[in-house]
Length: 427
Ligand code: PMP
Image (tube, rainbow, N blue to C red; front, side, top):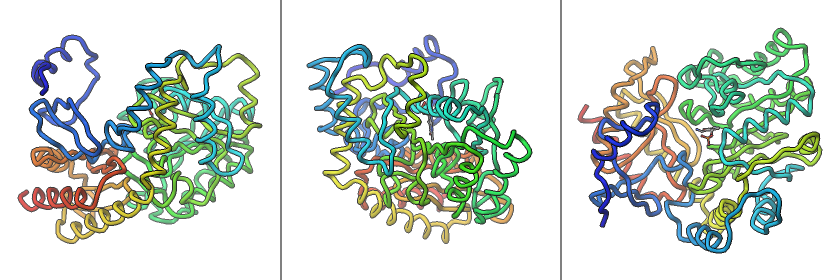
């Protein structure tokens, strides 16, 4: 049993010793002290179904025994920096990871986070092309360091930084976007940005396949192929941010971009890659990778033995336990059940997403699409009381984000939907 400080004591310490910028979900945050697969346990041993652990990196399930074993074994043997010496863990994992990517995408550079991966990707695109201009999508989240905060396009997450060389294109959002589901029309906006906002040449384009923080927005059909071709014509590189959509989460494919039928020049990843261990990566072609040899470039802990041992174990678990197939089957079932809920509850404006990356947007008026912000918080809170943890996102904070560990079952899906249905019915 847990004998550490209570939630109240931790809150007190956070107030005194931690950055005031740290935030928690829920008015009364829970103190999670144990995890097992799709479950979390609080200080009193109360169990919660974790339908949001996916964004927080867990794809195989909390404390998956194979991943834990890989971490413990490697920690017992050696933990060190990635630079200076050889170690088999990083090389083995790079080989395994490269085998999951299409085309010539086979050179890996490891980082410690998604932000670092995207910073590096943007820098490589700029070095490779000799251009500065990068196009990203409004409503995107790509990180919070200097460059990536520029690419991130939601005022909630942006500080007053110099945002050099980034252009934010219209978001191809089928629900709220000006052109509805017409991907080609949104793509024209990117051509306009290039024609009227740059020299005609760009360094690249960066986007998520499904926007996560932005509220599980699936890009309008036909958008990515059209934009990729526009960007290529302008001499730029296409960067796929797979930090959330990657690693089998979308079910139909291992990578989110694959469902759009495109092949990027650079792919970035983090979160799910390490099942909770700090790890990120940039994968690109041998030719593009060459740009980093123009200077000395390193990352002290990116790709260290413990983290890469964990990452390798994650790939094996995804394969052995058919987690991609499970994300597809359970995700489709869950989406169907949530779509049925939409018929029953007027407050649900939209249900969207793919595999185990689903979003439910709440509105107080379906015609006006008025964000139901307070109601979103209320439902989340009530569901927590019933033992179900879901996330929220979107610019207005009115979208539930459902991104559970990929071991989620149909029974878990039923429990989640029943708890949501019950809460909404009582509202
Ligand atoms: N890209 C995407 C799509 C993300 O969702 C996030 C984190 N929410 C990041 C990049 C940044 O990752 P990190 O927090 O690991 O720096």
